[in-house]
Amino acid sequence: MTKKYLSLFIITIITLGCSYASALVTRKSNDTWYQSLTKASLSPPDWVFAPVWITLYILMSIAVWKVYNRLKITEISNAKKIIKLYYVHLLVNVTWPIIFFEFQLIFLGFVNIVILLLFIILLMKSYFNILINSFYLMIPYFVWVCFAGYLNFEIFRLN
Image (cartoon, rainbow, N blue to C red):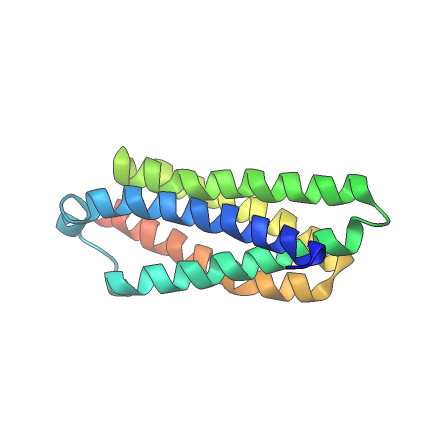
């Protein structure tokens, strides 16, 4: 693996590691509490979530890596800022299953999604000005998190 792709590997492993941590929390509560909730009519089957999230985590890893790679030679301070913003956003992302599944705080989970969307918008705005392809890679993630917000809100409303 060349040095260029080492940072992609590290970003992706950290991102997928967060995904795995989220899955552990989700799996623990999914069989009991979550199954008893009334869900939105548009709720996909449970098996859909894992492949969608893995795909999105890979796309967002590639997006931030491409921007970081573009900036690290000429604007290292901006490259570091974007990486920090990405990891803070990832922390907000990974707290949702803890709030929603572990603590069963449905409305607070919705608030977490709204905050996550704000971070996604900040990242996308940064990417748009640096590398438009990275902006495009984030669109499916943004759309899915909007959908997740709808699902979360509907669970709050219906229960």
